[in-house]
Image (cartoon, rainbow, N blue to C red):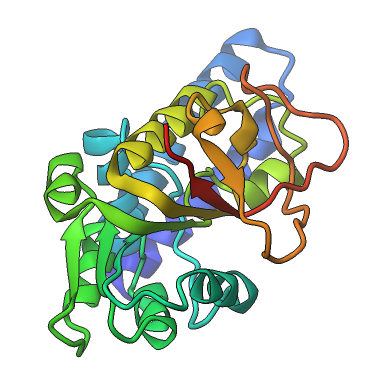
Length: 267
């Protein structure tokens, strides 16, 4: 038996023993069981941290750059939002000299897709996860595409932009939130983080530019910068994409569907 298998077998047997004794009438036994459970959980966490590179990357991001981290899972694919991308293409149909930011570009599929819709644009993909960023930088792309770390200063140097795409980024573990019936995001993903990111986008976006968001856990109209924007007239119908939360990070009862494409107005 391999060393890792022995460790897994031992941990599983220990867990079974703990389960059998956690209902003991003796309070000292129950207290000891609780302490041992913590040890077992810590051991399993350490094992996963050491063996799973994806888990390790996210854990380090939470520890080192938690204030800038939004979504922690990587789910992406080519041409994932054709209706939204097509509406943006139509809006810019007479423009070729576009500067586009793909914020939270994961492993680069969104950037490659945007090149198909905007053949002449300069496209910047920004990603905070170092493993994903390394995958992006290994892609074969043209010289008007670049990938950078999602650092505020680095992004600012690449701007301003005519369009900012932020797709399925401004949220935290949405499927778990919905499945568990979470009623407040105050501890895990407070409204202030969402609002601050939109303010940062606003400083990077040219007048008449597009701010494009989809799958967010908050409502754009609640944002500090919302008064500077108007929904694009010709865009896909708003869809409900899971629970939404208010400015206090509390669950909004009922389904809330919001547009995905907003135009930066002159101020």
